[in-house]
Length: 273
Image 1 (tube, one colour):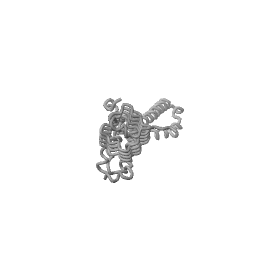
Image 2 (cartoon, one colour):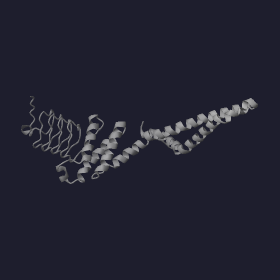
Image 3 (tube, helix red, strand yellow):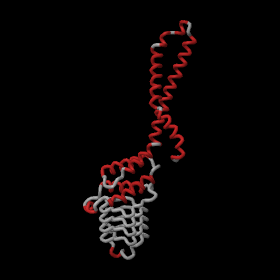
Image 4 (cartoon, helix red, strand yellow):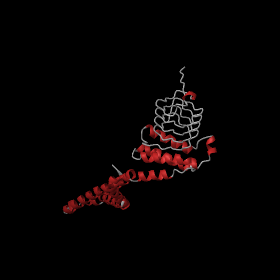
């Protein structure tokens, strides 16, 4: 059910939730009165002194009030729980995506972990999560001095790509736009970037051993000294890509494009001992 279809129900839940506190206090008051009735008033034995009608009315009224209080508590609790599930989930999604800020590593890592937990809970926001993470990956290099990549990739960038890879492996990312991404020294062994658009991306010295790159677009990408040992690049597009010193040992390159002039110097031989 879409958010539009849920909107009327969410409005009702919000209305109930807005009076949740007074409802709870009223229900608590009724329960206290019911307790007093059971422990004090009922001992007056009105039915034995000629007040049977009064006793019956009081007993019926208190019983009805008791169940009314219980119902009110249940409704108020359910409205709160359902709002947490159907309403604020999208709010948390938007908040997490807005916290993906290049150059602010701690905040971005926290946001990525939040998106990871959300992805584990529901598939409803897959497209938004994938798009948000991909935008963060594309934007990050603008905030980092390229010299910072000479040793290790920023941990938030690494974590974002790892989560994209996990979601993509389950076909939860319908489109993976990583055009121009700076992913030098990326550690993604056995990762999944199938069908990803990596046009003009930089993957120098990236560890993509046994990774899945099938049908990905690597046009103009730089994979200098990248490790693609055992990678599946079936149907990938390597046109104008820089593959100098890249290791394609045991890689699957069936129907891969743009390798016609480079195959002879690519190390693709697969030896089994």
